[in-house]
Image 1 (tube, rainbow, N blue to C red):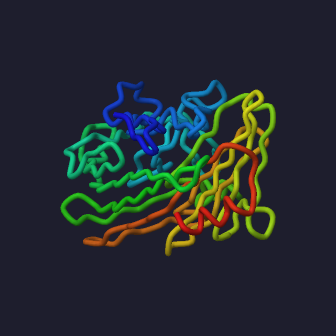
Image 2 (cartoon, rainbow, N blue to C red):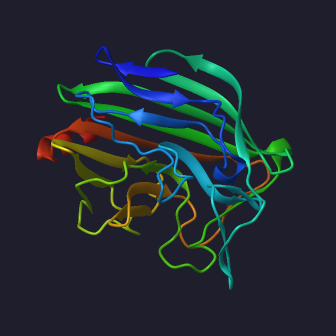
Image 3 (spheres, rainbow, N blue to C red):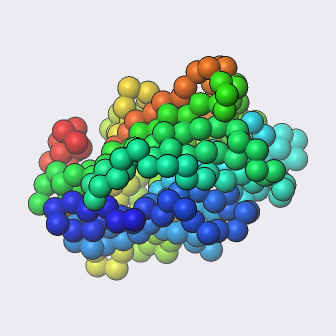
Length: 269
């Protein structure tokens, strides 16, 4: 499904993917491009085959792996387990070229429903060379059950508290760097994080902003390039029975290197 703004296709949303169980199949955005046509997402790269463009992924939800790949076990490290879940499309609540609202069922390895989600994605132009993606999700246990969301960071692997909305940039970039409003973004609760790179001769900039929930940022710019607004950074996140976990954030996608005007545009986005 294509998302368009300013008369151009800027993202493809794959809502019912046919993927191996080991990558925890889930809806994803890829390719995502700048208005100039430069791709700024990476899909199933050789270094991490379970990185699927931009997606909502959680390492462990009620003992099921919705991130893909290995599961971190305290005292053992990353272990290959047969515990991968999948996110299955239930129905559309809204669907247009610039906005999607979807219901999703999160099911465990045995096919049992564990959680229900309402997800929204919308795009809009913010300048001649930039556009904004808005993402929202609301996650709750099936039949009002409790949800326990876990991560390697919460299980003792320091600095590895990833899980939530995760954006994987393309592999093999000639240049990439990341920074926050006050410097080093990894583990911080900065209001925004910039990821900027160059694909061939084409420079691009991504500005990530959280909403009212200022979760820590998980940021990579050396071994690979990616940004995650992490919901279980150093301890499990428990969604009590009958409760709902809600998150909203935005990503400004721009051609060219970062500028002060881009940050101003992201404030307005």
